Structure formats: structure tokens, C-alpha cells
Image (tube, rainbow, N blue to C red; front, side, top):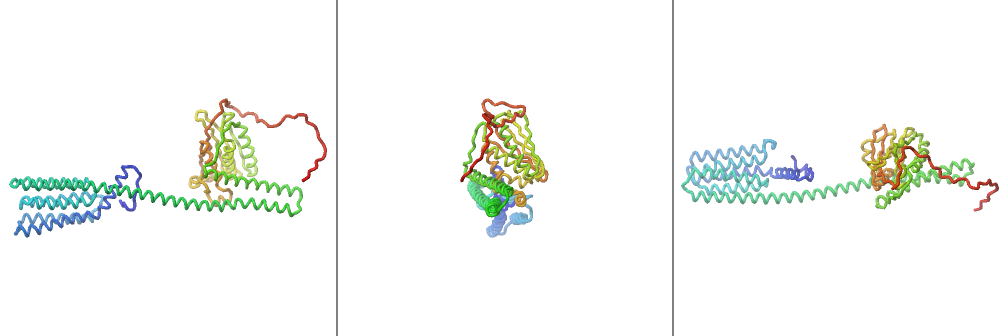
Length: 480
């Protein structure tokens, strides 16, 4: 595992953090393990020189033990560079070096020279080197236990110098306890540094992500402003052009009517753009208010259906509406905002299902206390990337689609924010070139005396009854 390349590639769970901390410690200790084994070889060579000078001539048994010890440590040092860490962990190399260093030395000083103080000094120095690796206290405990057992086992073979043996063993036991304590302190220190480094990494990662998000948002806003300026300039050009033609050119009454109709339609479109801009500014400022009042569900739906029918006729799209009874006669909510949501979704469906079919299905659940509007079309559909960015501000699915179909990319974002503030949701399923299905879910709050209908009621026509109708005739003079 490359700890530097996979730095903090874990979640915040304690188990994964501990596993990563252990792996990071091994990566940091890996360069020092050969140094520790080389330290054991150096102590063995010094011991060989010391034995040769102090006890001349050195016995063949002592010389053989020293040479075997040095050769085994050299082999262990060579294996460190050729064997993959997958087969032998660093702790394994350290423990083997402890055994190879301690066992021949203990046997040598016990059976030949009986100098336990020299041996304990060497063992203490090597145990200090083991602690400096800073792997885990568990390694220091294992190494210390190995050394103490090997030393005591060899010293128990003789009984003559009990006082010297006891003092040397106590020195080694005390040094082992001190080494284990030092290892634990070093581990706690490393763990605190690790957590501090991790916090710095998280802060830096969040800062970099925020900077990237800000840069991306600025780019998206720049593209949005460019697109919005185009969307605003197009109807303004039409309005100014036809107004100028009416002002300076002599046109027939029919031509003037057509020009006024074009000006009116472009003015409506420009007004809708301005409303979207005002709405998104309210959304970002957190001042988008939602009203709650009782209104007739079917009267409200028929107003939407009439408006959508006219829009569908201009696009040559077949539109139908299906009521899944029973449905409440009245509901509580914000009819204008809810109408804005449905008109946005239905308008998009008609725009992208040119010469196709769009359907609206209305259903309600008294158990779940929700009313559901399902809008289905057989238009161009959307891919996964477009779906992920569908309800984000200033983001549109495809620049080519935008150029072909127009739009600012604000309608669905505003609709999503409105539904969130109403306590509802908008869900979408889509397949490229097969169509899309939008589901608008609204919490159903009913008036106290609400009636559930099993069929569509007769439409009420707001028309005053004729009263004292009189036929009038004459002329009207209009003066400005």
C-alpha cells in the first residue's frame, strides 16, 4: 500500500482510521528497519572484537556463535530488500532480528564468559533501536518479552553468580518496561500528529472543493448570463422591430393586428423571463413566500388544461388529462405557485415533444395524504448526465439542445425549490429518444369539510344572469 498516494483515502470510521494509521506507520518505518538490523550486525561485530581482545585466544565455540550470528543477520538484511512485504511484515523481520541477536549472544556470554552485564547492555541498546522504529507498542512488548525470556533462560543454566545474574536480569526487565512505555508514548504522539494532519488534509480538501465549486459556479453563471442576454434580446428585437414598422410604415389593419399580436406574444415571453429572474433572486435570498388557502381542485386544473391546450396546438402536440378518482373537491395550498410548477413541467414536456404526445394524470391518496401529478411525454428524453444537473441553477443539459429549443434553464430549478418549500418533491425518469416522466408530489392538506368526488363535476361558468337586458344603439366618441 502506498500511503503517500492514497493519503486519507478512508472514511471517518474508527476501524478504517486505525487500519490506515497502522499502514502509514509501516510505510514510515520501512526505511529504518534495515538500519535496525544493521545495528544488530554492528553490535555483533563489536562483540566479536571485544571477545577477541579480552579473551585471547577466543574459543572455537564462541567464534562460531559470533560468525553464525553475523551471517544470519546479514541474510536477514538481504531478505529485507528482495522479499515482498506481502509475505513478511516488518514486525516479522524485527522479531527475527531480535531472536538472532539475543539468542547466540546470551548463549555465548552465559556458557563461555559469564558476563551478563555486558549482555544486558547490548540487549538494552538494541531494544532502544527497536523502539525508535515507532511501529507499535505491541512490537516493543514482543521484542522485550523475547529478550527477557532468552536472557533468563540462558542465565538459569548457571547458579554460581546469582547476585550478578539477578542484577543483570533486573536491569534488563526495567529497561524493557521503560522501552515499552517509551514506545507507547511515541505511538500516542504519532497518533495525535496523524489526526492533526488528517484535519489539515480535510480542511484543505474542503477549501479546494469550495474553490472548484465557486469557479464552476462562476463559469455556469457566465454561460447563463450569455444565454439569458440572448433570450432577452430576441423578444426585444421583435418588439422594437414591429413597433417601428407600425410607427413609420403605412400598413393595413390586418397587418397591424398581426404585428400587435407578435409584439404581445414576445412581451409575454419577456415578462416570463423577468418573473423567473425575480423568482430565482428570491430563492437565493430565502424570501420566496408560500401562501396557503383553500381552492377548488378541478376549477384550478381546468385553468391549467385550457392554457396547456392552446400551447399544445401551436406545437402540434396531442395533450390529454386523466383524473384517477376519487379526488378531493378542494385542497389547501398556494394555487399560483403550484400552477407555476405544473406549467413549467408541462411547458417543457410540450417543447421537447414536438408533434408528439403529452399526458397529465392526477391522483390522490388519502392514506399517504399526498396528491400526485404525473406528466409523461414521448419526446427526446434525457441521459444520466442531464438528469444529474436537471434541478441545478444556471445549468442546462446541452448547449445544442438549448440553441434548438431555447430556454434559460431556470424553470425546473425554480419549480423544484417551490415544491421543497411546499413540503413536496419532483421526481423524474427518462430514457434518451423515448421520453420522460415527471412526478410532482404535493402533501395533501384538506379543508375541514372536504368532499371526495368519484367523477368530474360540471364546470361552473362565471357568468352573471341576464338582468334587464336592453338593446342599445348609437355612436361612441373617443377623445384623447
